[in-house]
Image (cartoon, rainbow, N blue to C red; front, top):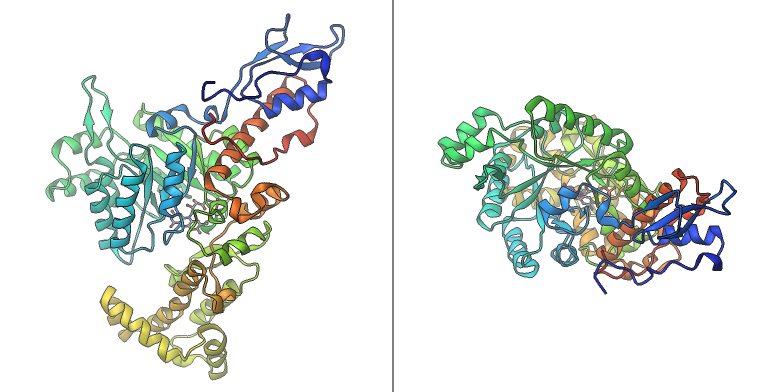
Length: 530
Ligand SMILES: Cc1cc2nc3c(=O)[nH]c(=O)nc-3n(C[C@H](O)[C@H](O)[C@H](O)COP(=O)(O)O)c2cc1C
């Protein structure tokens, strides 16, 4: 049997079943071509019938999840489905997660953010070995506090031939991304331009998207040329292209988010893409993908209906077996409802008041981190904090004297970022921020390691998609964390989306489709199925 033909391709004989069962069958099996007919011949009722019936009102071709997005996504990135398993910091989007996706013909991004370079290097070596020719990628995170790390990550990706990166947290275009995007670019014998490296720009704001949709600024290209980081030929070709051709539009997601619904943000960026393509005369397809709040087949189908080229999930994969989060952390995720999330101060941009979306169920992290931020705003130094408040912090939050936390913080920054220590010596408020950031930093680590004494302090980034996913899979094999593999999650989301698209098709032709047929029940799917 060919790989993309399902075993259930034989439609039940028309006479044997009623119109509702036929519609149900057609929705469950969108990969089978069907006819729509009037039945009986003198009524206006439209029914589903096997292909080949005489006088059909319409013939609907069979289709699968691969047909849902932009076909150029599949060819450019050499994957089976327009679906990505997104990067999750500190290696939560682990090597096994990316390998599982690659082996199933789908793209996954390794969660390199927050990891030391040596660890990223080890992960890249294993990914290269395990994935072979299959596509995969890694995260290139903007590091304003450590620009060297950003540059060294690009060195590593270029040296090791990592040809796909998701560039995230950039507030403006940086030379590091431009260097990565255009290194190795060349012309084919037919004159077309071939990129060696693909930047997936992760964006949530129009002004940032605009920069990645434009050619790289001349002065940036010239500076890279002067440093010998791009050749004259690469610079000449760079002038003819946008920096990125894949854009992941991040809506109301786990982690860093502006909490916009994707139904608002995605159309805004699609519109911008068309405007910029007209302005610069871009002829290559520029793909806009949807992320944030995608936790059911219905949300996948909605994203594709609006015009998404691909979809990307994050939160739901954190509860999967390949995720590097501790079993205790995953258990909390499997119990979450869509409302069990809230915004809390971010460790990396604490002083700027930047927030991340986290799980609030069964953990005090969000409340405690918010309290620390409130104290940071109200006071100018640790010494100014009232004694009884400090006592409560030491007892409940730090669980140690603040002097010990400072000593540990000092030791860390002396080695990694001595300039932070110099600043802390000058500015007592900065010293306070570094102490508070100790808690924000370790709360993520405790969630990953499963530190039993710190369960109520777990910082777990999570969006509302997790809760609605849990609701969808309740009572099915995907309810249990030990059955949640990223590939089964992906296939169920994508096949479910195809079913919902078919249900909508039938409705537009006048078939009476009851609302419950829009609910696709998760099932164990054949991982080689198209
Ligand atoms: C635990 C966790 C960690 C994440 N870490 C990163 C990261 O390091 N870099 C990044 O670009 N996005 C990160 N994200 C965002 C995801 O890659 C993805 O874009 C997002 O989760 C999609 O929204 P969703 O959570 O609603 O599915 C993280 C998300 C989660 C849940």
